[in-house]
Amino acid sequence: MWTTGKPIYITMKKFKTYDSAAIFPDMIGQVQTKSILGEWFKGYMANGRMPHFMFTAPRGCGKTFMASLLADALKWRTPSKRKIVFNCSQLRNLRQFWNEIVIPHINDKDVTVLFDEAHDMPKDVMTALLTITNPNKDGRTTFSYEDYTVDFDFSRQTFMFATTEGQSIFPPLMDRMERVDLQAYSEKELGKIVRVGLEDYKLTDDAVAEIATTLRGNPRAAAKCRDKITGYCDGNQIKVFTLDHWRDLCGKYHILPLGLLNKELELLRLLSRKSGTRLTELSAITCLSKGAIQKDYELFLMKQGLMEIGKNSERALTVKGREYLQKLDGNVKSNK
Image 1: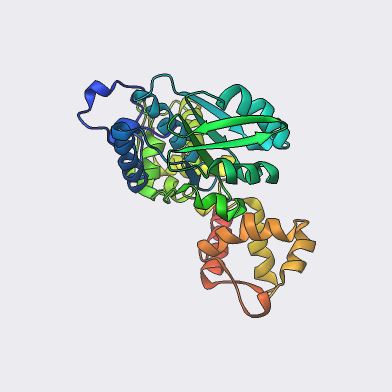
Image 2: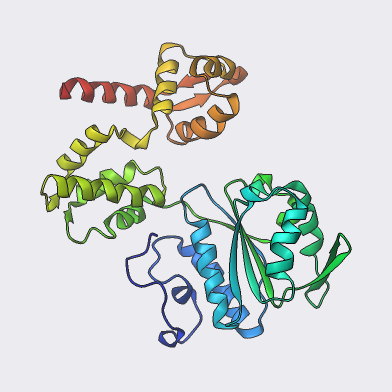
């Protein structure tokens, strides 16, 4: 993942206190988030109490990675505490949850359960969790299903959830969790992530700075970018990777400035030809659903200041958006 490349699994003897440096060794970014989780962890090491957590962030930002590292760290106080990871997109209903997760993996066990893609959790499972995660003052609760009753003891069991869509989680269930909203990654942090694993090559600072602008704030994109750089350097027998090399690589892989997707560029070009376009018309022209346009493309374009939504929900290109297209088209002509 996005660490400095040093070993993640280390002994606690190195640390005098149970702080975030012990839980997330050498992990780049998320300073505030790591500090908050470190405080919770110090309390856990002292009294054995740990809340349930809901990690929220866009895809590729490390929420499952952080939750997994925290779950591993809980073993330091309770070595018998196992970590179980379930992808909620594979859950169909409460019966499956009960028979395949609760009975074999949770009942009367020391365990941390990480529910990944929690927004895909079936509604009847969320409803059951409302009861399960509402213990008495001793941290215990019971839940019955199909004549089978399970005692949950939250001094032994911890739940963690990871989701890209916090709004899809039942609000009462969210209220029972400690919500952990991951911070946005800075371009400086993304640049550090890009350099990880590329110690055999020298990347110039101006190249790294421009690379970071194309990563959309996403550390997973930074990690994938390393593979392109490695292939380019090895294929061209390069040891010093410069800004000119990066721009040549962008041309070969069709990487757009700011990391725009082809569909986002298509939307900008549509708006440049017809300002004041409504969402329904954009959907018809691009063959994308209105929801996909709003969620997957417009949010990023507006965040970058390239488009705006005006009166009557009409979409329009901004001055920055027009300048972006002009500069892009100018670069294309100059490269021909």
